[in-house]
Image (cartoon, rainbow, N blue to C red; front, side, top):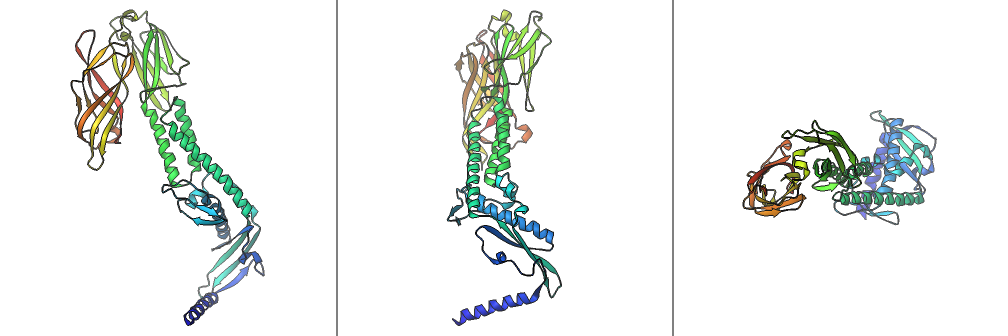
Length: 439
């Protein structure tokens, strides 16, 4: 009992000493309003200190904003890295996670922030306090800002609904990235992600949005052009995304010094048809049509060789062309030792005339693998016309080497196939972009 009495005496003495060191030299009213030191269930009472009245006004509104933010945005469940959240029961915070930063929330595109204004302040009281010893003074500035429990609950409900809507939009875009049907879907997705970026204020979801947007933009680098002869004077071109056909509304430009009446038009299936007259082409010369397509800064080019159409388009000349992107997948990735094990290679080729052919061997140089991948005695036979995916497994462990970013673009190699017309082995050069699962 004596110890408690002594503690109380010391606290009272400390307060008295603090009061004795300062004095009020100016105030906005003779007497402080009752609301300054009274809890008000229908309003916020905020008191700040500052060197000037102007600074105090700014600080007071900042404090009001933060108090409203904490009562609205921090009192609803929001996805986090550690799956924790804030829960409100009977207007009291039962658990709390500081995953948000108020400075970020203030700049976020949240509807309820637009309604916070100094014009709504219901009362102001200030007093200038001077330090007796130093003579320096500062302002104690208090404001009464109307904010009822009913308004708080209304704003909470509105915010929670908006947050769930925005989260659902993100999840839908994350699922859609592997099911792109048209090139326009990429631009539409990045536009939506920009809107989500303006809304999300927590680091976790902001990083997720930025990461997903980066993945969408990288899809432009995975676009390629391919095509096939429909009949003499007609060639169908198709845009591929990672080897899969996708629609595109933009028409390419076509040029040629060999053919006449050269035109291009869209088709109902999302491809485009190149039409031409080759009657003036000179035999034994390189008769080609250059196709160029620009998509959001990405320039796709493709060369149509009329020689591949054969004499009178009927001879079905042997033509195999690597296309798209080479996919490399390791069964095991040891990031610490920089090693990969059992690498599966998927190469897409276009069997333009549907000739039966056999793959004998394949050697592939990958920039970030120390040694070439060599496949001998493959002896795989193919006869499907159009796009064919050739799959080969390079067994064993392979060391990874560091490569500069500008070197990390293309694989090069030679695919040896048997020409059915001559029976001889013909080398087909491979120089294509690629992707790995150890990036």
